[in-house]
Length: 157
Ligand code: INI
Image (cartoon, rainbow, N blue to C red):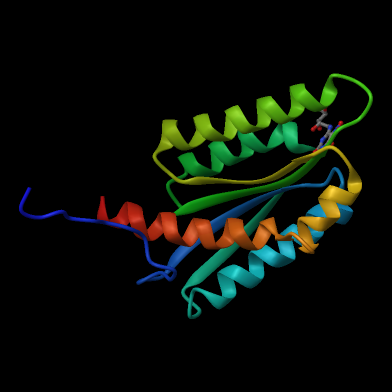
């Protein structure tokens, strides 16, 4: 092997792009913090080149449909889904969390548009708070950076 070519995304965008954020209102106390972190990341890493449209769904279960429809418009270079699924006493958690994750993954694969999974799936409200801008960082911020990296990577694939 003479030469290994490596291609990876940069932490910024080279041209003007539009990004869609799909936020669920359920557990909005947490999701609002993810949204703020995500916007902060897009702002810091874009040098003003990213335009954002925010869509709001009732819950995480509805995120995939809106993400998929937004991706199909071909208007957005990436879609970021933000939500918080917190375990309760019933099987509802598993159903909502699994369906959301699978649906978002399908939306990306079917459209070719990166759909970023910024949905917390946690056992307790404390764990959610830790991941929404306190001791475990902000998963919304991470989702924003991941979107930028994926936009940049897909430009080169
Ligand atoms: N939606 C969430 O976003 N997070 C949750 O924790 C949650 N729980 O636990 O019930 C939740 N449920 C609502 C669901 O996403 C749908 O909106 C609802 O079932 C209507 O389709």
